Length: 399
Image: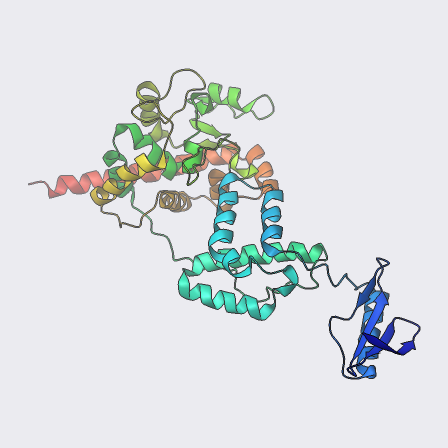
């Protein structure tokens, strides 16, 4: 119980307890009385604290001291739920939370997460898992707490470690044209085109998984139908595909059909002419019937699955003489290198891969079909030349 030793002030009030220590209170902008979080040894200390609160109020910096009493785990779950993100990104965020953030911060309130705690967490995670995973987890934590700062639940984001969210992945390997051909052959005729389009398209596996007959143009006339009246591709020979949808496969095995990774991912890709034979053969032999038939299905007619493809992929790596860690996405890296050597600019390769910003993609995609023809022709010439050299070398080695 407090005694009667109090003091009237212009702002707030201070009061002394029987123990001799002092407390302070004031009315916040919410109309509620707020007390100091602790007690003070002297009256002067209590008054100084009140003066600081009054200064915050006058500057508009005051916030409810109880605002941060929100559980991080609950707030993070709502944060992910509110994001407009792809199913694969949603899955990634929830996995990072479950494995790397909630074990440390899940039972803490937002205002209990301090900069020293964040540093200690990062140090522990760096010892327990890979640097890339730690960087992803740190970026997610920082993004969640930045929103909490904007919501005025905490005063300042405690994630303040410079460069902690930056990933420094190793340079990914690339393959030669001969190795890509060996991979495509080793995958078998049903999946040969899948490898070639992933390299020289280049398309993501989830984009290829949802590619349909109606997305394919074997000539300029068919391309004109795909483009529509406002984006005529011209009269020159044209081989290409429209990427309109994607079907990423989650770790649960669920196949989620939707838009590509970004709006830049919706694009028309002009293909090099050497792919025409493979494309026609695949349409005749393996694609589902009907205009909306999937291009890539398994032996039993089921849509593309990573597990089945992965087994064939690992065997094909050995045949092609590629390292065990060579991933399907590395074919895209290989395709970028071939494009660049063929004269493509960075913008050209970004448009082909669907990696530009939304604004840039809309500008480039509308006006760059002719330029994409040139890039595709360069890729065609480059691959044909590499194949000719490889064939010549084989002839020379024969007795």
